[in-house]
Image (cartoon, rainbow, N blue to C red; front, side):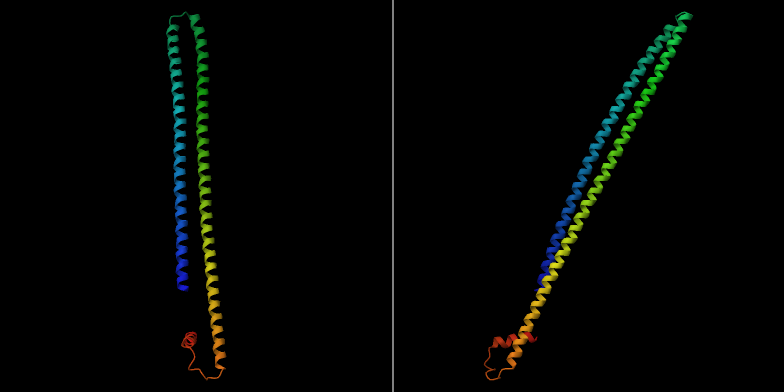
Length: 207
């Protein structure tokens, strides 16, 4: 019976271990899918920001090209103007140069802002990923702790059952011993006519 009990408990332990392993595998697969979705979402966001930056750069290039074209046209006109007019144009040209310098600085500032924004987004993504991984590790650790506790409880229950069965056997042996010793104090008359079942029981107890 102890062997059957151990086998049954081993089967139950194996079943619980397999169940926990399947649950752990399910969690890992869920984590992998969530990480894949997160990476895809982040990639889409990065692509969107990059495309936006590219379009902005293209717009600024086109604007600069138009301004340069205007400047060339003005330069052609300057060649036909008088000295006084040329001086005035030089003044205007300087103002335009300063304006272009300001626009260039503004463009650089906008690019710096976009770059900083991308950097911050990347930092947020990495931090979220770290937090997700930390949370997933915590869930796995809790599952592992739960599995260990369950196994310990099962082991304690098995020990209690074995101890109870051992105590029952000891009590039964003690009772049969007491009965056997009581029989020995009675007269032997009629001993041959005693039941075979009782004799067999006493012989089994002695063994």
